[in-house]
Image (cartoon, rainbow, N blue to C red; front, side, top):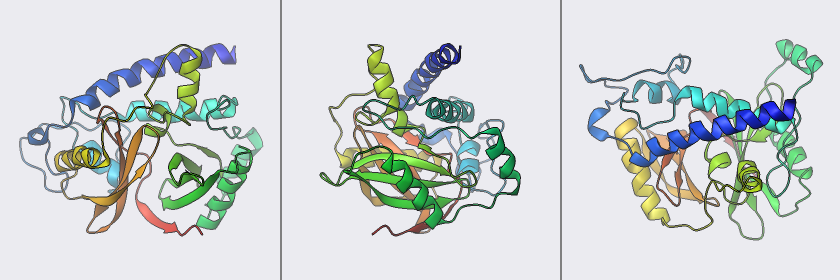
Length: 284
């Protein structure tokens, strides 16, 4: 029964993401979107229910600047992706050539969260190292670790190629480690568990062929920021993953968030699920 429900949810997710991908491929409409920090009177904008960030972080900025004609993925779709990622990880569906998932929390573990204290960066690093050990792949190493208000973010690289492999999220209270939602799931042509799953069903999510250079991807990202977050800038360097590029976003020359650009279609996907940037740990 669980597998049947998960399969049905997966197909529903793929359908929704296909619609979202079409919207992304259209690209942003600069003239229709106000600066979230300097709103223009009379400009039509919509806020997706349940996605406002009272702390004024990037999710609140993004949702307050989404035009009604729609060129971004809604908060509902993001939440569905996160739910699916958690469910699949708990059911051990991250096997094969993709990323292995951590188990879901037990009832006792859930009850303990009421008195739990958030992990430190060192604690998050230890959790990720334990996670990578379960993959039995000595070529994969943690290369970047960042802390946000809602989670920890970890980037894993291949030692042999020095290329970015995949992205991880660590829950700040439970310590649960799971593949990051968004581009890491839908665009990663080598490590994505969704790629492996769709391949088993005769479907393809993304291609190994890269048609956009990093400079072309940067142009797409800059156009997106100009439309949706004009008070931010793009970091000079990009992390090259299999099927997409990942850029850090800056405000006042300080870390603010991140976005990804599909290396085949040029679609831009902003990571709205982290919250505000708090700091990072240097990985030796």
